[in-house]
Image 1 (tube, rainbow, N blue to C red):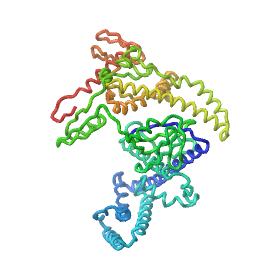
Image 2 (cartoon, rainbow, N blue to C red; image 1 turned 120 degrees about the horizontal axis):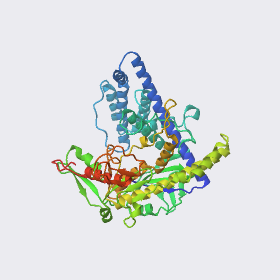
Image 3 (cartoon, rainbow, N blue to C red; image 1 turned 135 degrees about the vertical axis):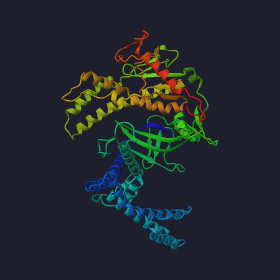
Image 4 (cartoon, rainbow, N blue to C red; image 1 turned 30 degrees about the horizontal axis):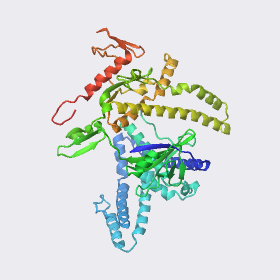
Length: 561
């Protein structure tokens, strides 16, 4: 799956239509989040009542589940009835009979008899409409009571029941003015946000803990929406090389050329799946997601004990599949250019964006150091001027709106240039070396504020703030994510060292530790062997040594590393 991003060149009328589509997606997100929040609050109130009655946390959750068991079982029986009627109406194979939940045998027999009586009489459509209404009503009851939380499919069904109601009653009678996929994408995004919050709360999501999902306010969130189509009858397509056709929006001109994607589609090597339209600064962008058939130099195959072979794009995926048994084998090999480069260790830091153990360009020894692009630093004067103009405007005025647009434009230009630079660097690294080794940096800890508290104020706050801004401008996390998928595309491998690897404080010659060595010093002094080398040279050598140890495999009867 690859995304092809195009900058749109819409007219004023098309720009207004894009904003309306983005507004519909934002409304759908808020609608779905409101339904989820209402259900979660009802569940929380029931839990609080049981906790106040003296029950434990586990007992309260079990009691709530038991209270809604009967309603949940009725929903299952009616939903099976609805799916059976849907298969009959569409000419599919009828669903096999299932054992109904305890206490719902009579309801199951009554619904089965109704389906049998309606068979061949043309009443299946009428029964299907009644079943849909009943299922949605039962689900709405379960949601309002806090027994269930609506997912994206449930939210879409509830919305279809309420969309024709007046605006005062929570309906959206204007829904037919935009493509229905605007609402679908909003429901899906709310489901993803809710899942991220739950996974973070349960400890299943790495990184900083996610907060409770928040509603999106117009003018305060990014404008975006997604559109889909049937791949067998495509609507999303390129009209020539300079226009993009999208459902409901028609043909919109693009700034750059779409020749690369258009030719892949013509040759049958790409199938367009969807398009996501996003506003960034003063530009509208369309990201066309396509399923592309391409040659990958290196694949990893998992061979099970019974001889079953499954190919994977990365070695990590194959090793995960081999945890339950079998072995992994490499198919293909890197290109001659990559084999000549070999393994490269990269020290990502503050003074240089990247210090390499081998030159990026063999003919240029100076390419062993990649300087910071300093895109934010170069635009600080322009950004400060635009923000001063914004601060002198009155809230709610048109002048403030124009000033805010100028600030957003400067930020967007910095973002685009940074992404362009990182894309170029990551592709060079992925196509010129067989292995790319980097540290697993704790970026949140590295860029933490040194402000402290009124009782215990921090030290060198301004210096630390300037350093943090410089480090965040480098976007080291974005570089790592780009390397993760580009190394798999181009046949190389990304090696991420353990967080506890002492790269900066170990001598690369004698492997002795020097705990007193700090990153602020340009030279590394080894007290054991007396070596004095540049700090970046020492760090990159240690990264290469650690990566080779990590890549070394030990023969075993399971074929595991």
